Amino acid sequence: MSARVGVLISGRGSNMEALINACADPAFPARIVTVVSNRPDAAGLDKARQADIPAHVFDHKAFPGREAFEAALTGHLEAQGVDLVCLAGFMRLLTPGFVEHWRDRLVNIHPSLLPSFKGLDTHERALAAGVRFHGCSVHLVRADMDAGPLLVQAALAVHPDDTPDTLGRRVLALEHQAYPLALRLLAEGRVRVEGERAVITGGTVPEMAVLNPAGLSGE
Ligand code: GRF
Image (tube, rainbow, N blue to C red; front, side, top):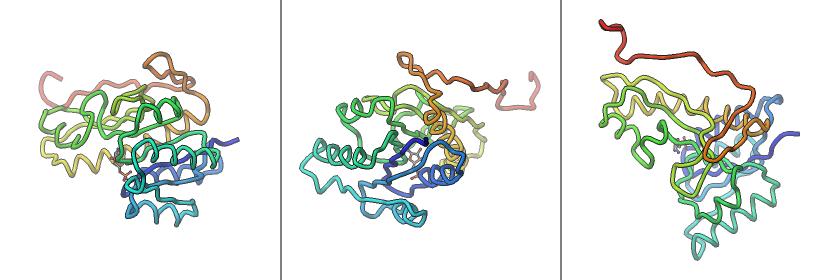
């Protein structure tokens, strides 16, 4: 039986599309049963509908407060029999009540190697910090922003001439690989949460150590 997934978006929805594409494979252990945007103008809504996935708007501004908005969201997701909720560029902070309700069933993707660069403008900040490696993280959501057990991380080398835009584009391509992998691991029941760590069963770890810059003396 495949896991029923709800995807929450606020904008472009390219990660949602990556999840939709992964779920299109009949062998994939999850399917997306609903997409919800808090913004009526989110471009991802049309993309979901083109893929024949029901897409809904829950405009947070139409609710008297965060709790009412989230209660409606949970009501909808539960009515659709959702097992797992994927945040994919969802730009609303969620209350601890919502996060606890969906504990270990709520996933987020963040464009940095957490715990570095939580929050916004991650590519600008990574470049300003001069880090040699950057990437993305998929994690279970906890009440603190951009915190929670890591499921998948993907890393790339920063180029000396990178701009936030060039770096962001390469990271986004990695996000589109990392998110479907994390969803598959969860849907296959291969994630065990131990304290603040997620332990994955049945995976292999790439044997790698990389220097950046490379090819200079001393390597
Ligand atoms: C992605 O970079 C994601 O990591 C972050 O917001 C962006 C959403 O992009 N949380 P998209 O809407 O999935 O294209």
